[in-house]
Length: 579
Image (cartoon, rainbow, N blue to C red; front, side, top):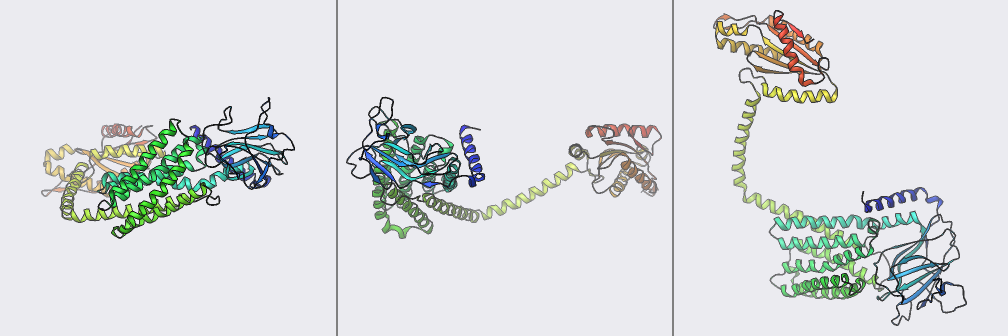
């Protein structure tokens, strides 16, 4: 198991343990009030303790409802926040923070207990991603001040989303519960991308399916990367943010490719310019951030503005032409409109235009995925019906020819496994059957008996009465064998006057009893040819059984043949069991 698998397995184990220990743990507490802030950065004492974390009568701390975006920022990039931790019967307490803009350190009693990102000598640093944070706390936290040192050159500064004081095990369960939808929808979108990509190869409307495949890949990557559970798989927040940015920035490119194909005879140049512009931004933004020229965080606000402008332009361009689209295209646009609306709502929450809340972006992606999947299936069914109609006559001819060939094959198979004179199975069939029954007997530990049968003095019948008479005797004996042995017993003609009987589930005694009854039955029969009586006919039999006589059932034929030789040497017309 890889490191990612071990992380997820460990998290799931903690979730199970949390369910068992829920009654003994304190209830999670929200810390979204009672905060204070102050602008600037604290001086540090020689021992590294921030001066602002020490007790003092400093009145520069100001109350704030939630520790984010204090008033009167005026271009400042440093801020401190603090809160008094509440009482609780904690076992393994942690502080959960949804996100922080942009880097931060947490202090308790003047000691640093957590750090996200790296502060340089000037108290500044580079963007380190937007992960969720789990800050370890001691059990006796009641009444103690918790401080946050924050630096951000982004549009927002401070803690963001939600802040909870809770047990560590409860936090993992909380993360997985809120990531469940993304963990379902994300792979579905990626599956859609795979299916649409396959259709793009085999169907005629390749550009449409290619655009849908790109959209599924982009949305699936974005949803999985933004899922909080991704941090449990791989603790690399900046990598996940790059993946989320790549998917997010690709969405208008996929939409533009789709609309350009649908409106190829009306506004293709405008639509092409839009998606090409977004492609250029994707390359420039991720390339510049990857080279360290800019922070990845700064690319999101610019893209949000570009996305809104692009959606407005696209909407104004295609609205007069909507009547030209068919029902499937309307359905795709409708589900994308839902997805786009949720993206805009999520954007508004991110920029503080709407109160914080979890916007179900994955629900919009799911609606789009289901719509495209259904349309793809309907399109595939329609294509199949058209192909069936076009090739109906050819299929009829092929079916007739196939039927003729099948009949011929069946006849050939029958000939290959059947003795033409007696109608019994031949040696080829016996060899294959013996392998099968031997394997079954060994696997199940069941007995298996084999009897070799030879018609006595058969050469004299041929010499005295001719081969036609001999054939009549062979056919008569074969008919008697077929009548006498039934159920699982199988009779085969090995060649000449020699037959073999395979008796699954029978031991040597049972086989001997059946063969002696056969000899009595044959003794009462005579055969006629050309007005002359040919009988009665006698047989000699040799028997061997598994596991009595052999540990390997494949040796039974050889052992039974030895027993048959003994029966002939002993005077014929008898049954001999191998000894």
